[in-house]
Image (cartoon, rainbow, N blue to C red; front, top):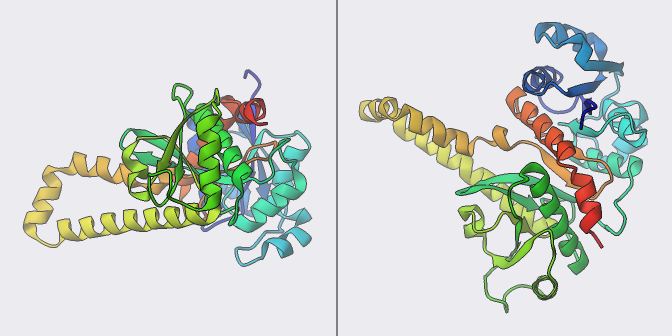
Length: 335
């Protein structure tokens, strides 16, 4: 697209905001010349940061509000009093076609509810799904649902398969989506009634947007056998938190082992480049940016505790969903 991509940004959500948000925008703007930003938040706090991080004046527009959705707010309370908050105003620009997508590091429940109140569901989709990128041995996986829906029926899981495949194609145009259902075993007889019914349907009906590869177990998620992994929100969220905890544990124990003795410290110096690559592979900041799929505009959730590098990556994900025509791809394949 030749016209500038416009990203609406809730500058006040998450830890260390708005500092990390403005620094993240500055980092992203240096590598993305055709993107502009509509920034929502307290201008008394934003303007000094814009000067500090040397954000070009022709790349952004500021809208002042001192109203913020707090981390401890329930989704309902945030929605009831939220029409003047930075989050609500940012999402409202999508409804008014004044921006192409939104990014927020704020309250997850509030972001989902306010998005659903302001935006339309894509026709024939019953439930939105929260998706994210996970690294694998062969590249990247799209995993969904990660907690938006605790209970799902067969149609929901089929929709998630299509939406996850559309997201993979939008982000990685040269990749062919290969879909698997996350299950307790790889045999057809394993799993509950809903996942068995979904398996039967996907196995019999051929979709042009993806290849169905059957079931996948949790220990194979990062093998790279498939690149789109579908689950209900309860299962997906447990898998996500387990993976995050395991990654943090490995990095922590490795640091401890390499710093506990002279031999360990010497070894870390010799293997510095390899260790840096290993750390980057597990660095959650480089995969930051969960996407709420199913709405008629892209809504990107940055992790609340990430830093400016992570926030910049969520902006990059946002940019790629627009360039890759994510919403159009979902609409073309959903039924």
